[in-house]
Amino acid sequence: MPPAPHHSATGQPAEITPGAIPPGLHGLVRVGEMLLAFGIDAIREVTPRPHRLVRFPALRPDIVGAIELRGSIIPVMDVVAALGSGTGNDGKVILILRVGGGVIGMFIDEICGVVQLGAQAFSPLAAPAGSGCGAPALAAAGFVHGALRGTVLDHAAFAALPGIAVTTDHPVDRSATNGGGDPTLLFACAGKPLGLAARAVDASVPVTRLLPPAADEPLWVGMLPYNGRRIPVIDTLMLLGLGSLGRPAQCASVVMRLPEGRLVAFAIDAVSDMRRVQEADILPLQRFAIGEPGLLRGLYRADGAHLLLDDAALAAHPRLLMMAQIGEDSETTQAEAAQRRDMQPFLVAALRGERYAIPLSQVDEIIPAPDETIDLDTHHPSQPQALIAHRGHGVPLLDLAAWLGSAGEPKPARFVVLASHDGDRMGFLLDELVAVERVRLQVLAGRGDAADAHRLPAATIRLQDGASCQVLDLAAIVAKVRDAPVPIAA
Image (cartoon, rainbow, N blue to C red; front, side, top):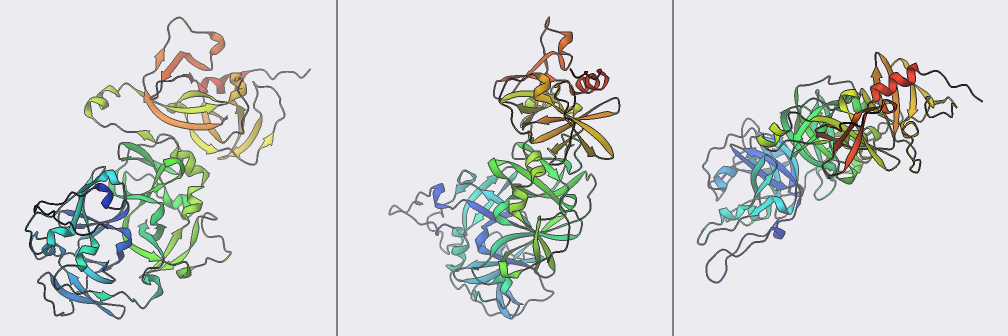
């Protein structure tokens, strides 16, 4: 965090640049109607407010008592009073904050999770001349992150307040050892206590109404409007092999960063804590099959046991990567929303270097290209090349690039789009999933061709980058392949 603001020789506030406030992960807390942010490294833990505080001698009126926490007496501050915004904060939670080599507690109403704040999110503040006690220096900057607006507090400035008392940071249990361990977000999902390393978290989001998912994928429970985008919300329990959430109409979520700037959100109940977790404090799960193999690091005990998710395994998970690639841009204004009412969602996919569009209404499901298939050895582009078992049926797979006669360099298929016609389902092999875009369908008059029945009648769409691509009718292809006579080998 930045040093306390200072003044120039003229008595005017010295200029403060955004670079003075380190960007990075910040913990968010609510105090009354204020949303406050602290650098994640400054937050040691959160603990419930006891029924009664320990009496504590103090030189400041905003120090209202102390708590005993694992053998240490920690003074507790009314942060509302410290900020000069009134007194009598009735927070039910105490945030333990690292300040100046020690720790101090402060009343908060709730922990709101974590958020990644870049330099562009900050509006640095300077203390007014003659501010006296220095309390305004606690507020280092305002911040804006999507729909969130609040104040970044300088944890180092608390230690510089006149008459402040802090406790030496030497907790007795190793789970909160001073300076050690990875900041970790703890939360619950359908009552199950879970945790995820903060380095992988872009933000946590309070309860939000979800939009319908873009495809019928069991893991995909909805779309989350988030910072001008719509990102997939994942059934956290199903992903981990611990049950299912069904299709909640609304939920809180943890947004995780994946490679190449992609985002997914995990559905949760609520954030419960932020802790530093050392590797030595994670209990192994031995060699038993617990949930989805490889996605759980182990068990961490912090006022109750928590299953820790493996952020590296999640970042490489093929189904998460697949769904993260087809997040949508969301409406930003009413005018734009009105213009989009007659637009349709299309899945844009790449085949041998060319892009094609598929109406999302025709997409039943998207799955990673399976490792195990039954090769049919048809060697004919109009016939399925392989067969897989999926959801109780034998599903044929068609090499879509070969069907279309694409001339580009063949590539290993990474995904399968499942589409149906009249109850019969087929899988289409794709190289890449590019995006989901809502655009108007452009029908080109006079270019219909019966030989092109696998394309919507001479239809194209124009993508956001200005390029055009042809629209494929997967349902028509399913019907054509199903009803076509089997070619006789020469």
